[in-house]
Image (tube, rainbow, N blue to C red; front, side, top):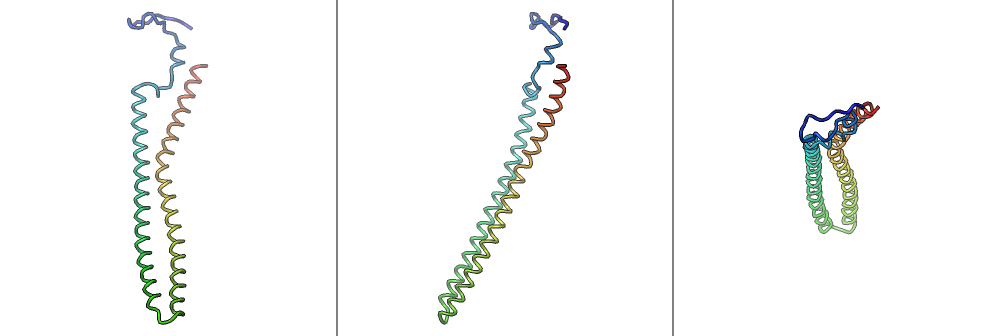
Length: 150
């Protein structure tokens, strides 16, 4: 490989060769490129966090609404049981309360799982998108580096 002296006085003692370009690190280590990548990663993290917090708020609202509704139903069931004319009516009210409660809790559990799944998907979508960008970038530049080294 041909060597030539650098025209830059600060690097005059360092010989330039074609091989120096081949062994430069990926541009990710260039401060300007690193800053650009850092800003992009911050944007992705912000989008992911926003989606997570939105899902968490929706989840919390669902819990509050459910508990509020269940407490009202529980109070109504207690009133119905206490005002029953006889033990048979009280037993019927209690059985109806249990049946409704079991169904409500099962339905609510399914709703909460849906909310969690949606929030997780929305939170991970920006990260997955960014991962694909980075892998594509590495593939492109890695191929360029391999070709330059040959």
